[in-house]
Length: 389
Image (cartoon, rainbow, N blue to C red; front, side, top):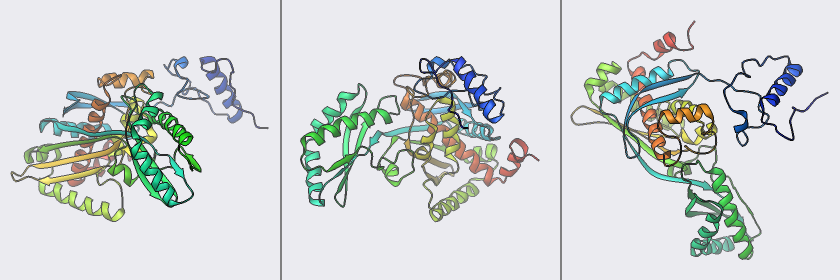
């Protein structure tokens, strides 16, 4: 007979209840959870982060650096925490940081910042949907005022409109301070939409989320219209450093980049880079980000160019990097420590963090591309990684 997982109505977030649940699971499955039950987390801090807490899944944490960033929000040297179980990963980013440090650092730029909720309104016909869109444009200031009554931080920037059949899809774009802001914008959009439904005639129905925000999904619209932070990392690497540190000449490196671009087009991927999700995932786990947002955050556009003087320009643009330095999992003990290691915990730090993430991604792109160009990729995994015999 099946039994439900034990819970306490009075206080479910205690070490005692975690122990009770582990004992229950051992009884039900025979699995020992001794290591799962070893943690430094203050369980009383977990409401809002997890349910049915039993312990922790520990991921090895390494550090790469120094990373030299020349950004508008991040400036100087940083030691980057990376949580991963993939051998060679930290070493690869460390090598990329060495190369770009010697080249003068990574220049970073945040171009946009927006978080969305995308309701859909349903009408009798397309003409009514079009007229509703005109009304939305004319009444934006009033909609903005209602939406912002639900938040101290969120600000409604604009409302995009997309018409199809007898539906009008609205993409509410907000800034959300140092929070990732999905829940914040959801609440604000609902307040606005409830007000709209109350005063605008002929609305059959509305759904708060139509899937047009593409939350936790890769999409073309987020490549062109930012979800999270739109950030670019770029650097120019002297040919002599490429040969010295990457053991590859510039021409071979650039030819490989051209082939990657062709293969990316043929395969239809949303990223013509090498492996940006590796850095993003490892940093997300370390710093308490919503790891599922790696799906959107992994989209990227790489551009490379041989300069007239023989040096190599390389940039990567991440158009939908979803990060936070406040709220969610960022305040948990080890995650907060990792953000503090970067000087990125708390208010007015999210753009700094976004620039550090993008700079780290660029270092990994250079390192892996160099390993492939110099034919050292497989050898490195055999020596340091999980391909060991």
